[in-house]
Length: 494
Image: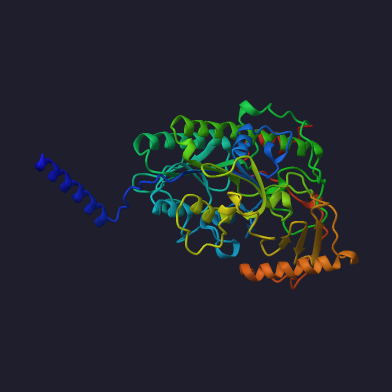
């Protein structure tokens, strides 16, 4: 018996010594929460049932909101160019603000790297628009990874991360929403079987409801044309040229925007989201069947909003609320249930927030603010205002009640009272009774510029005209648009 005990002790001593010498962390006695991060593409904050939208069917996401906290004022900070999703995802993954990070994340410390450093298995699937090498540097495991901004949902090119940590050649699969869901489920099931005691960070980045708005055939009749009302701030044409009226997104329907096309777009948009909702349910059911649900923090968010006919626009290349505000729900162990927070929060705040909620040290050199106390209900808010920026052409600042949007190249200002005018329809700028408020907001915007290292001059050297001629715009579909979209929006189908 003595010899057996001694041998056993010697074996344990050898294992411990080997772990210490190789630098591999010892397994923790306290099980950290898993992270399931679900990220939608181009989803407006109001395109959810739990956000008060009576027309869309999102029962799974709505239930997630009941089991956690839903933020009503979550924002992407903006973008350096028309593909807002690139800087948005770079900010999310780095915890850095718009003017401190760009697109590719080369050499930038990322959220999955932080979780991996502290003992997590990290896995990613779906859209990664920040460079293949940065995905390889960020994740330990990856399957069905889409490197790009958009694709035909029925022919999505995806790659797998091999045993050497390198992404392979693309293969084409369909349908994107199902493909990414299957990859996540496969990871969760395999992880439970092979390493159930180790926490995971699972990132699922869908490519819907980004266009092409071509729903899965099973969902084509979910929202018949004409049944979805047009937005309350719908306009057939924008009031003025803000500098990006000819960006690709703005040519997805004809000029002027017909109510028929806008309603059809909303039907397709909602169908994409409802399909995604059913697939998210499959992932959640996998968590439950594998016994991981109760110890998993689930985040649901999106990279940016979308105009979809609001203000005569279609895309996200503007700073109206519909394009900058995003859905954000968080649920899981230690998080209050069925709560709604009106605190201002950026997407890049999620990196430090999730780190704290998971019991990890705060990541180094991030701009994001740890909102864990707000999530848990111990604080009401951390910010009194929000700042947004798009290229060198638009800047905005908002408080609880007021918002100012500035167009430096047009020397034009908008001021809205969001309490009375949430749809941003009545411009109060230049009116004497609001002059003091306008000056106050302008001073706040300049303060934000200084704090965020934004160097854009608020009045451009050359002022451009606000008038435009929509009849001169030439529409041309991109290569990713399938026949369904070509027939519906680009060919004469009267």
